[in-house]
Amino acid sequence: MDALELLLKRVSVPRLQEPAPTAEQLEVMLRAAMRAPDHGQIKPWRFITISGDDRYLLGELFVQGLLAAESEASAEKIEKIRNCPLRAPMLLVVVASICEHPTVPAHEQLLAAGCAAHAILYAAHAQGVGAVWRTGAVAECPVIKAGLGLEDNEQLIAYMYLGTPINSLRKAPEVDPTDFLSTWPIR
Image (cartoon, rainbow, N blue to C red):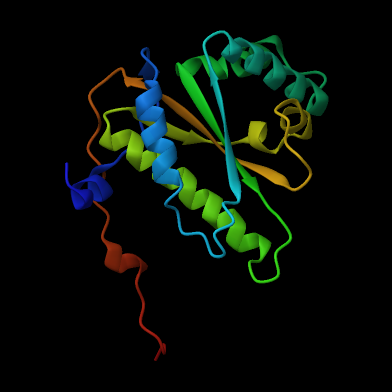
């Protein structure tokens, strides 16, 4: 697969199964992340892998976070959030680690970490690994962030669910890019 085909055809793969990416595949994904645009070369990111039985521990942490925000959550909602990490054999948590810097503002560091996450998605796809980027309330919850060891200067920007696609990959939808293009000055 050439680079342009990869860029034009990658799709999210939400239905995943074993096996998880190999150590070699994960290393390629992380190496791709290191090539993200990074003004100042400060690498404002870090990654946390969660796989195997540790996914059950993450599910319990998700429940703790839910109950901290919604003490009367239904049993159905609790069970649903508990099982979220089991939707893939591996999760890679992408964390933006924002530092004080004289020329690189926080928003640029956050965007750089987002680019690193983006590179992981494409490197996964290039290797035949299914991947989907998820966030939601479990990315914003202080209880969950503390349980994952995030510091005050860190922001959880992605749970990358990684594994083997269960189904054939869907075709990427055709979108007309000119719908998103304008010319300046606007007349």
